[in-house]
Every structure is written in structure tokens, then in C-alpha cells.
Image (cartoon, rainbow, N blue to C red):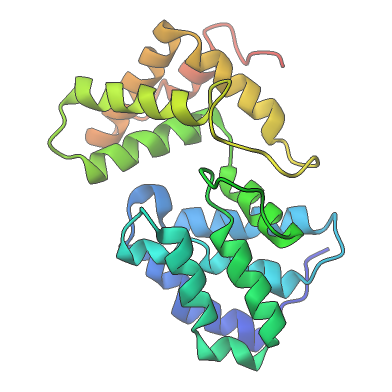
Length: 230
């Protein structure tokens, strides 16, 4: 069942907040925020939470990228809290909870989210699909490190994947109902297989840098004999 979001709130966010993602890198664009919103609302259906708060948190979660990536979670929380329009729909306490949830969504956070709202958006933002993760890593590298050559981008990609997603990495999952745990295991299998990871990287790198070279990526992700069984 589709959650009820007041028309005025939805219109404001769709017209004033979501369009901000047009200026961000390809790993944090309009498709990304729409996906996080959808996934957040799906996860929220398992809990007794306010769907309008979930919707708003997801919409604002990366708006802080306007000031750069380093403190984007804190900046996004400030953007949400300082937006006077939100006072039309939410109490001061609800706005504080939403700000904290936005601040807590970052995967490298040193602490667990302070509320179920933070857990929901953090989990929704993970989107652990091997192709999506590796593609976004390539996209981010191309956008932020244009001076790197192909090998430099590959080394950066591997370093990031190992630091964040491999066993012992800093990524944490918070929602049991999410499919992310199974998908994380599939990604870790790829990270442990240098030959397979290189094949996937090369196909994605070519797809992102050369128009019309999208074919072959999914086959590389799944393996030559079809999808890997989990």
C-alpha cells in the first residue's frame, strides 16, 4: 500500500529539494535520490513510523553535497533543520529527529543511527547491488579524480571497495528486513576474486567513458555460468 504523503509536502520536495540533485555527481544524481526515497518507504512499512518523515529524510539526505562530500551528512542535516518550509508540516521535535537521521546516514559514521529513522535511510542508501556499487565507484572517481589514468581509477576503486565493503570494512547494516546482507556477501565474493573484479571494472569503465558500450557488464557480474547462488 502506497504511504500517504500530503500533497503540499510532496509538491514542495519535488519542486524545491529533489531538483538539487541534478548538480551532483552521477553517483548521487536524481536517480539516486529517487531510489533512496522508494527504498526508504518500502523499509518503513515494516515499522511504526511517520512515512512523511521518512520521505523527507530520504529527500534531504545528500543535499549537503552542495558544499562537498567530506561533511555532506552534517551539512544536509543543517539544510533540513534550517528550512522554514518544513515547519508547516512538522514539529520542532520531528525536525530534530529528521536532522539526526540525515546526519547518521553516512556509511563511515562512527556510531549507530540514533533512531529507527536513521537506520531506515542509512540502509536504503546502501543499495548493495554489486554492479551498482562498482559502477558508482567508477562514476565517483571519474567525476572527482579526472587526472587519474585507467590504472589509477582501478587502484582507487579496489581500495575503496576493500575499505568499505570487504570483511572488516566500515560499512554497517541496520535493518534485518533488508536484502543487503545477502547482496553484500555477493559483492564480497567479487572483491575476493581479483580477476573477476578487474573484468567487471574494465567493462564498467568502458561503459562510463565510451558511449554505447554497456553490453557484457551483467554477465561479468553474474559470472560466465549465470548468477552466483547465495
